[in-house]
Amino acid sequence: MLEVRDLRVAYGKIEAVKGISFTVDPGQVVTLIGGNGAGKTTTLRTLSGLLTPTAGEVIFEGEPIHSLPAHEIVRRGLAHSPEGRHVFPRMTVQENLDLGAFSRKDGAKDIAEDFDRSLDLFPVLRDRRTQVAGTLSGGEQQMLAMARALMSRPRLLMLDEPSMGLSPIMMQRILATVAELKARGTTILLVEQNAQAALGLADSAHVIETGRIVLSGTGPELLGNDSVRKAYLGEE
Amino acid sequence: MQQFLQQLVNGVVLGATYGLIALGYTMVYGIIQLINFAHGEIFMVGAFAGLAMYSYVLPESMQGNPFIVLPLVILAAVIVSVTVALLVERYGYRPLRRAPRLAPLITAIGVSIFLQELVRLFYPGARSQVSFPRIIEGPNLELGGVTIARTSLFLLVVALALMVALQTFIRTSRTGKAMRATSQDADTARLMGINTDRIIVLTFALGAALAAVAGVMQGMRFVSIDFRIGFLGGVKAFTAAVLGGIGNITGAMLGGFVLGIVEAMTTQYLLGSAYKDVAAFVVLIAVLVFRPQGLLGERVAVRA
Ligand SMILES: Nc1ncnc2c1ncn2[C@@H]1O[C@H](COP(=O)(O)OP(=O)(O)O)[C@@H](O)[C@H]1O
Ligand SMILES: [Mg+2]
Image (cartoon, rainbow over all chains, first blue to last red; front, side):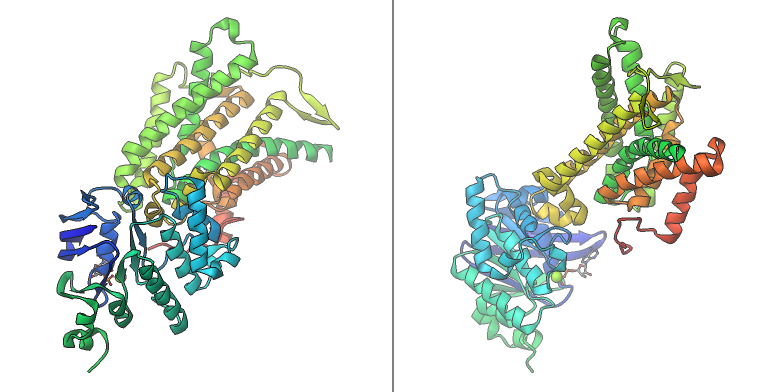
């Protein structure tokens, strides 16, 4: 479904992603873990077209997308819920969700169905449809960002740090939702600081350090790996 | 009292023009955080395009019929202003979108001088004042001792209608929503599938069209124009936009009316017509010092 081949991305002269390759198959949850500044967000922003790679290829559903503009990429079914949530702060919950469906060409009926489905997933948002998004709590904003990404009816959903900065309870709720999406068969590329939870969900996982993949395996494999346990799961 | 009411009406009419131009400043700022200092010249070019349509295209037999003249003059103004604004955006500002903010600002000043000189050198007679047709003839209207010219009343109605239409468009239409999204968070707007380049083009086009209408209004009201009207009109409209809160659409309209009224009142009661342009500058400085976010603006954090 998604194939990333030797991707390189630079900010000016500084290379942040130095040749990354991995694949995501339909129905899979693939996770990228790694410390701060490893290049995870840069990778996702490149996949969704916000950044242009200096080298390498991104093949999505059999077609190269690495030179397409971002607004074309979401049309093809690659949705991105960005790090830091980025809801539209001065718009209502409803308007944020409408914008999530902006790229869709199918009818209002299908969109309304997905709207209901998104709100079923996040019932709190239902009561807050007319509330301005900037006044939601962090956890609610995260739910809105995820619901908004789902409104494009993506084939592949990219989530960047969905539990970042949330209370432990809210973090659990968000991660439970990711698990539920997985159970429904959603294909997900997940970047998550909570490596324990991410690896628990992942069919396949990659450890990134300073712009390179240093270790790959299934979720359980990496959960059992000594160096992963030391570096990312806080064990001695 | 009567004099006060008269000045109030004069101020509102004046303010309608400022408000229309101010919308262009504020919308462009809202979308790409650029003060488009060439916008005053877009207004000036619109006035000249409208005049050219009247003087060189319309046959004399039609010049007396406002129902033919007005739409065509406004159409010509809008087409030319929008075209010029889009060329400036495409070749002046777009290549500099990721450059330091000073770069497009300097470009804007260059474009202003270029457009002024273009009109001064090539529009027949534009080195000094050129007369502009009144288009709407007929005696002034009187209401409770307050006089209002037919032209002014027409202009006021058109300006208000355009403002309402713009607000409705931005609040409720799909494209309006995309404009708001782009102004709040451009990268995330792109993630929604919004072609932000197209939104930027549309924003420049809308602003230019409103300025063009204002240009024709200015000509009709003052019955003459010259290549310098863009500077003063631009500065005053910019003041209106800052007064209302730059980036805020309702603010730009409100700022326009407030500034128009302030100008009319100070001219009447304080400064006299020789100093009528001073009021705008005093307002601009006062706002920048005491309330930089403007009347309706939120306090904006300085962006990194
Ligand atoms: N906008 C930017 N400009 C310059 N350097 C950046 C920018 N964003 C990220 N970087 C650098 O790129 C590297 C990777 O960052 P990022 O992709 O955000 O990492 P992660 O998401 O894994 O924490 C870091 O060294 C970071 O400092
Ligand atoms: Mg990150």
